[in-house]
Length: 95
Image 1: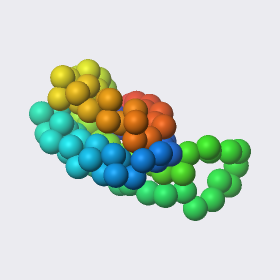
Image 2 (image 1 turned 120 degrees about the vertical axis):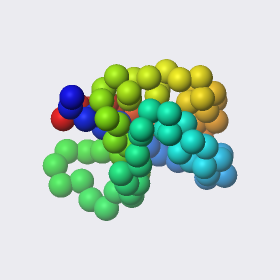
Image 3 (image 1 turned 90 degrees about the horizontal axis):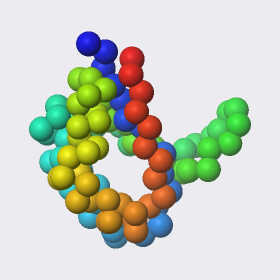
């Protein structure tokens, strides 16, 4: 079964709320075997434009696990904090 990655492109609007959100996400990943691969800040856009300054990449054992994580009550409960904390685009990829 192919692995899946959730890639988040984001711009933080409220650093304090973003820290609250970030601190709670790891526990939502556990049930779905999600693993944080990396977080980073944009240094340069070599081709095209990327309006978001930061990125996060999370690995899941399958696309179904990524979907289940996103739909889970534990993660959905964090969406109000995330919405206030940052502009976020989450995209799932299967490899």
